[in-house]
Image (cartoon, rainbow, N blue to C red; front, side):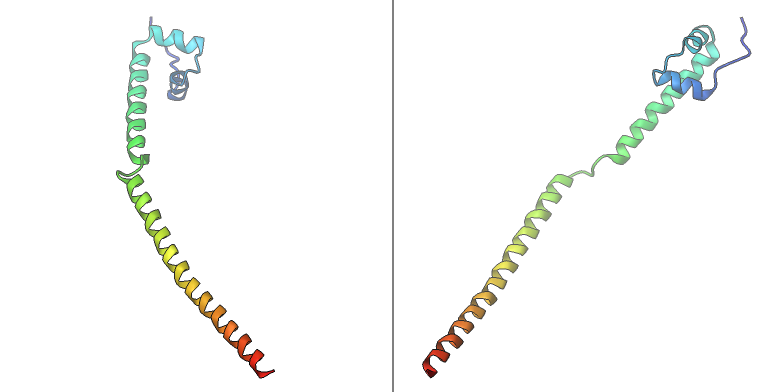
Length: 106
């Protein structure tokens, strides 16, 4: 039996996405041309998903590079804060010396 009204590609994609329509299911079961289209759409979807996974996956070694970068930055910040502490200590010493010199004038 030859059918004139075939489902559109959109209807077939919806059917593949488990939006099961009884009429589309019945049509696909008896129409070899639409079954071939469904297989083609399914293959295309699988290939697209595979290529998207490759494109969107994290680059190799990203965890190691990220960890190394964070550790390096933390070491630099520690060194910078240690250096700034030296200035703070110097400022405290300077204020203490000035305060003591004022006490001698009395």
